[in-house]
Amino acid sequence: MRAASRRSVHAILSLMIYRHAHRHGVWVDLEQPTPEEIHAVSREFGVHERVEAELLSPTPSPLVAGEGDTAFSALHFPVKGEDESATRAQEIDFVVGRHFLISVRYEVIAPLRELQKVLETDELLSGRTPLTTDVLLEVLFAHLFESVRDYAYHLSNRIATIEREMYAGHERRCVHAISDVSRGFLHLESLLKTQEEPLERFLHTLSEKDFFGPSFKERAARILAEQRLVSRLVETHRALAAELRETNKALLESRQNEIMKTLTVANFIFLPLELIAFVFGMHALGTPLEANPDAFWIIMAFMLVIVAVLTVYFARKRWIF
Image 1: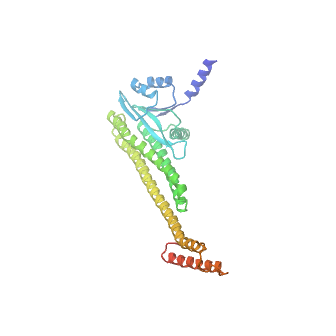
Image 2 (image 1 turned 30 degrees about the horizontal axis):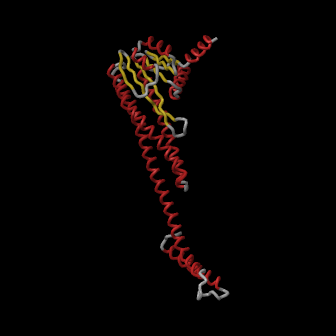
């Protein structure tokens, strides 16, 4: 029974291997592969043992290697985490040869699933897709960077919402929201900066091995340009989030200053009233109006006159209203 269970699990995992044959080659995508599956694919395409060992487990930092007739790279792409503004990294390992492209991932990565559906749909509609390995590699990176760009636009839309809330008088509520968005852009920018140099070395390795001819240099330049474009987009939006933080901080300080000014003016108005009430509340011999039956109303009228005079004075000075 246990053996049957193991076979069932292995059958499910085998479904995680996607193959797409293209012109002069094949793309093999492995999602959460078993060591046996990695070994079988490595033997099929002549992948070096060192590269095979790297494919067996996730790589914590970007890595580029050229072994024999293959080029290997482990790259990390930013995606939205469980939290609305949390950013995490998804690793994809690439093994590229003259006539094959192998991608290995340890979790579901939406852009690759979408690309597979696009290729399958195109194949059903128009027959075998006339792609070569270098074209497929460029299309794959285009889908990955498009996903990062979409995530950056998602965060930028939150900036627009926060800005409306901020100018609607909800500055305090926006403090945490701005911090969350800034954190998201910071992680995005960090991952893209970390990715840039290994990606450039990986494409340079492919150009040096001359798998795809001289035309690949232009294709590699387009892939790098796309990565840098996304990186600049994230950098721009992060700067916008930083400016929004400063604006929100200025609005909070301005509101607090207004509150302090109002409290100070109110204190100046009521201080003389307290003094008058204290003087007439002493009940000492010779206190004015003590024997007058209308003393209370006279004192109240006097206080109201003082309040009116001080209010007009502060209003003319533009300290209130």
